[in-house]
Image 1: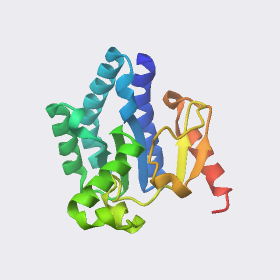
Image 2: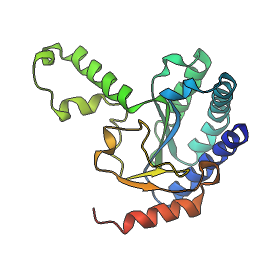
Image 3: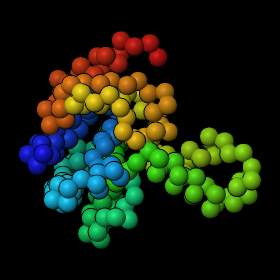
Amino acid sequence: RIAGHKRGVEAVRGTVQACAERGVQYLTLFAFSSENWRRPADEVALLMQLFRIALTNEVQKLHRNGIRLRVVGDRSRFDARMRALIERGERTTAGNTRLTLTVAANYGGRWDILQALGRLLHEHPELARAPIEEAQLAPHLAMSYAPEPDLFIRTGGEQRISNFLLWQLAYTELYFTETLWPDFGAAALDAALASYVRRER
């Protein structure tokens, strides 16, 4: 598992580069789900360490390549250093437009919908007794800055969405591959894109 997580960071780098080269404008990666806290403590600690290292070492590379970084999820469980690294990375790359890379960390689709509803009702308490429309809730979702995804890719042979972007995936094309994430690269991405363009939207 530990070796796989380390290889997974390399796969992130390669996939971001491949997406940028292919003109993809928005890429969202599920780095750490809210359910991942249940994993063994040493594995969670390693994941946090890898995330810190990536935020420290990769942000300037993203910036040089015109890539904007966003991190979505509940940041309250991250320590102050991690939160500062996230904020610095987002601030440094805020003006970039080539590709928006979103990292979902301590994220869950159900959490996203609930926090959006909470924010909406906080701003508009009068809606507590009125029907709420999609257009009212959508601006409060964690990824309100991005269009809904065209394509969802799930690696490793799993065929479920695992509480990822539940609201946003309503009309997204789903693609499942046996390729494990640490082995995912440009060729696997091209296979997914080829499958997508053959579909009638």
